[in-house]
Image 1 (spheres, rainbow, N blue to C red):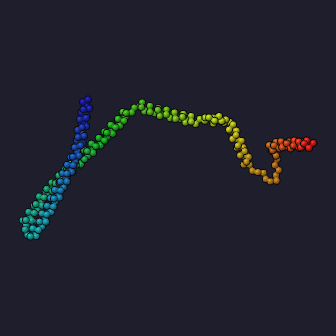
Image 2 (cartoon, rainbow, N blue to C red):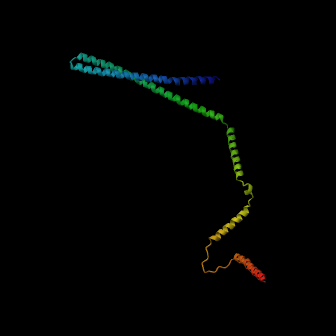
Length: 218
């Protein structure tokens, strides 16, 4: 219990430190901008003193020219100090930005780890096995339903497969006979057995008709 309280206190302090880094960075940037402005102002003052010294030198006023050069030296000393200040501020900005980036990265990794841990805790091997078993059962049920729908029923279920195959063979033989080439003209073709059989009933019918006519004539 004590460890949890200490860890919560530490995390709270870290969050407060991370949240306070933003105002600190803003303050450092403002300070850096102020130092840069002051440096530019002193540089202008130093350049102005150099121009004055040139003018006094032309006017043969040596003392006044030297006084201008002394002021220039003072400005240059201040400019050098401001440059050192800017370097220190730059260094602080870089360190703080790196620290903030490190803190943000650690927080992101910690959040990701917590999310993964929560997902793992919400799942178990039993849950996964049950889910797989349910999926397999549903797949098997769907397979049985599809097989039941594919089974013929009603009039189509009473068809004799052997009879249909025999009928198909007859159709194939007739199709094959139709595709055979016709014999050349002038070549006598022997009557087939089927033709001979079909001619016999015709001759018998003709004989019966002749006999019937003779009887009617009497």
